[in-house]
Image (cartoon, rainbow, N blue to C red):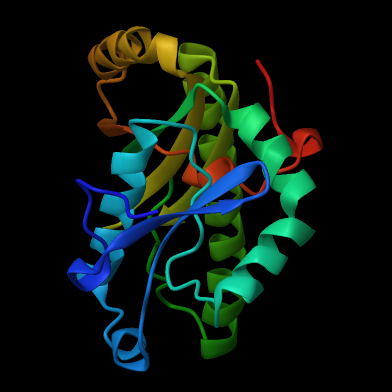
Length: 221
């Protein structure tokens, strides 16, 4: 069934493909299209998902997922149907909010003077381990503070050190659609309270980070 009002990758026609109790949003592709999967194609993929998310619960496939024909698509959905349906029920009425939190690193490196090469190497190893522990400790404390502020249904957090020497927490929060405005208000309060952090919020998004998680992996308030 052609889906009107939304164009797919490379302006291809989008179709609604019935598969049991589910419907898959698809478009035809060619070998040439497969070679053109670039950043613009990834953005178009995300746009289609976001447009469909406005209308219903969506389980996003990974960008670049293809099937040889209708039968292979149907078999794949059939074999995973129980898992897909469980995810639909778990994520129905839910949205993902995305927080980026940038803070100063806890312990910049120190230069070793008046040491032999061996001493400098051992000192560097010890300092590196100490800095890593301090970063992990600060990241855990900050992520716990974010959890207490926002009280998400579930969360995914990654932490890394940027080239500029900052520490970046990348946080995905799963929330109920009905609480989006409340979440945005909490974000305004958090930016005012946490003066030593630079924070950036985006969303609501489809629940990208939570599609493939089992119920046992979820963290609750």
